[in-house]
Length: 371
Image 1 (tube, rainbow, N blue to C red):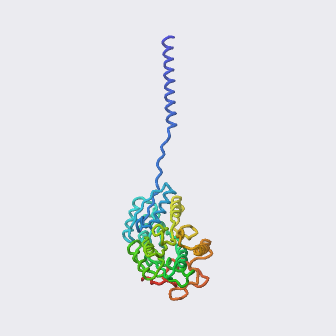
Image 2: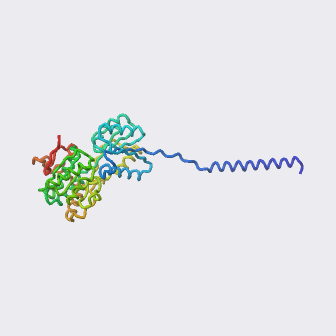
Image 3: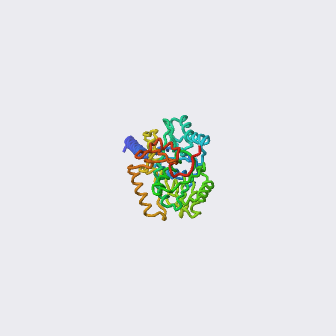
């Protein structure tokens, strides 16, 4: 083979090798997996009036938050607990909006005006206020018809009392609390017309010692069942220590006072939180005023204690069926006030507006509403 021919062969081999190398390089490039950009989290914040360990209101909301995180991994949540109602809450809500939270749940009645004020400055943030009545373009309200569960627990209390005096440790004299006392009393009197419900106000949401002392006062006054609208188990623990019964609130409180708790009126916020965040994510959210019934699952009663009779369970089941199927509701007339005057005529059903502005007690309540 002459020199020219050998050179041509060598050049051809070099070109072939280069083509193979380039081809291999291209193949490696096209098959290399592309790194996906991390998906941005949906930032959601919750403001609580008490500590999450209160075994009551804030704890129930935080269980709902945990349910949300479990069902929607794309959500990142922040909580601020033990935030006083008023100016402090406005500062906290503002900070949460500044930190990029796109949905902020404010979970106490006293956060209403602060929520509205902050919402005006952050139109791109969705605010949800619990138990209030004011809305804006980016503010909705949400609550559940806890009065329905209260009525059922009243049946249990009315069938369990021997002294016909039932104590009720009440937080603040606002329509929500007054409505709960009235519904509970309606339940009591439906099975025990001679029983009375004696009310003591604490003007606190979370003060274990004060709330427990209020229950002790009621027990001294002859109550043998203690109900409550408070965020601590203090009242039912006082009942257990006295060898009496209690009705829990917010969550199943039987673990806190197993010998006393007949049942509890409970919240289930999780599904609603998921539904709301999904609506914001899908751009279908509306600034409505949600007041969910028992049939939505947002309110219920806890399992009965072993001291509750089968007869009582049957009465509760029958009443619950009427409420769940919407054949009847708690504030259906005739309903009288403490003076005996008819406030809701027979056959009439109290309007939502009237229930949301309750400022009077029904017949059977022993107590006054502070002005």
